[in-house]
Image 1: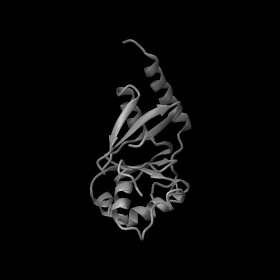
Image 2: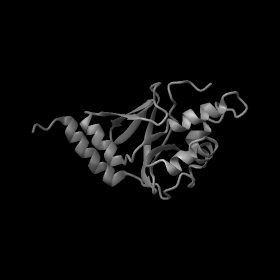
Image 3: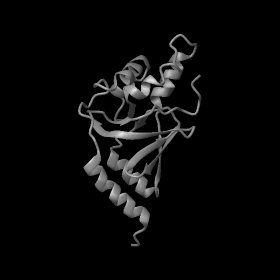
Image 4: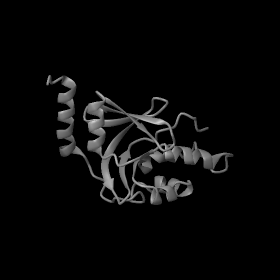
Length: 170
C-alpha cells in the first residue's frame, strides 16, 4: 500500500484528536452553554423525534453562536415555526457519528464526507489542520470545538457557528 500525504494527515489527525479533543462535560443538550439550542429544540417539533426515533448526531451551536442568530429569527414572523424546524433539523444527522467515525469517513472520502441531515440537505465535513469543519449549503463554515458528548440515543458535537440550510432564513 502506498502511503500518500493525505493518509499521513489522517493518521496525524487521529493522534491529535486523542490529545486535543475536548469532551463536553455534560452529555445533555440542556447543559450549560447550550441553553439557546435547547430552547430552540424545545420550540421546534423535533424533541419527540429525538426522544423516540433512534440514534442521532447533533451538531449543537454554543449559546454564543446562537446570539448572532436571535435577530434573524423573529417569533412573530409568519412561517417562524417552519423556519425553526428547518434550522434545527439541519443540525441533526441520523445515526451515531462520533468524531472518530467522521474522521474515518473523511479518510475514505479523501478529505471530504457528505452528511445528510434529517432536514434533507447536506453538510460537507472536511479537515482544516486538525479541526473537523462543517460547510453548509451556502459555503458558511463551522468548526467542531468539543466532541462526543453521548447520551442513550444521541451523540453531540459543539460547533462554533450556526449552519444554515439552503433555503434562506429571512
